[in-house]
Image (cartoon, rainbow, N blue to C red):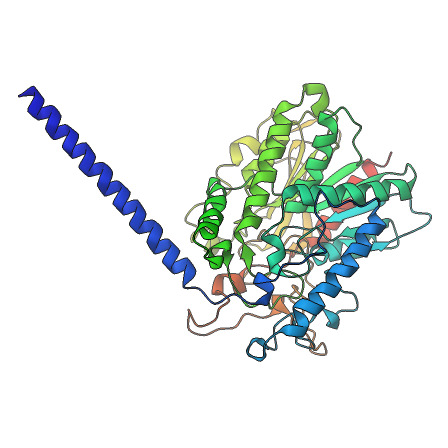
Length: 490
């Protein structure tokens, strides 16, 4: 009888195992089918560029990086712009000359690295954009510092050209480019303080630069680090990116190398997103977490002061990971500015999962050892916002909840219920992502357009069209940057 029971159990186990394998294979096959049924790839998804910088490229200086970049853009012109087939011509294709999305319509081609020297500058600013972006991502911040500082906006490898550049990039490529730009700025400033401003992945690369140096007992390069929507941590699902890419290569299905395949209508940001790009950010975040865990307490104290601006609502990076980073670092004037959602009653009653709920216990803790600010509605009845301190104040004293509250002359715009990952570095008057329509400009204005119609018709999703792309509190962000920079000029 016992043998019969054991045999039956074994058969049931095998049946369940085979069924599970069958279901997994069926789901995998279905997923591959739908991924491969997406629009056909274009030249900008498939062309390989020979003049892109990689971590093993032998360059002696940042000037050589710029010379290589010049050859790279000539290659894009030759291999892509001049060879686009007629059926790809579109009034909103960035690679079609004189289209509404042609970067040449802007006084400066923000896809390229740029440098604005200032001989008598008292400080320098290095600007590092995010994944799939270009130097345009921090152009509003650059304009704020122009004439006040020696400014350098770096085009990270794989960016600003064609989306295929992100299919073969490594995080080490980004780090090597930042090393060159940082060394160039340090040499130009001759001992004067250098601040780095990093957006999303750019923040992660800036953090990596200092963690790598500190782990080797070298002095930090930056007087301070300003992070905007930093990619400190990602959802665990990001780890699956490598497997999707591997399956695509194994089956020779090129479309599996892409999370999204879209019309390239944005002149300064890829709208198609390579699977490898997500994996690069994930691997970089893991590297930073490993480096940080390996630092001794005295070494952690060497990490330059960090000022972070982060939306509580962020679908791209983990807001809690930013808070965890601050918890890991000892007190050194670190600051965190959080932008809450628009908490009018009509908005809060429609929220299914309040993003702030999981953060409240940590950011209001009396044991907090950094300065924090929450930008939030004054009340549920008004769109005006206030800046409420938590954690430590500017003098290092513990701030209890409800103290140090300052009303701001800033308001939530009508119809906007939150910020987003991409919105923070842009003001309302930004010519591409802002809300101010400029009818005399014969070029695309993404932030001021939201086409309406039936769902499922456009290749650009409604969620992407309606994603908030500018920051109504951008003046406050600049004010806090200046305050921070003055406090860390040494």
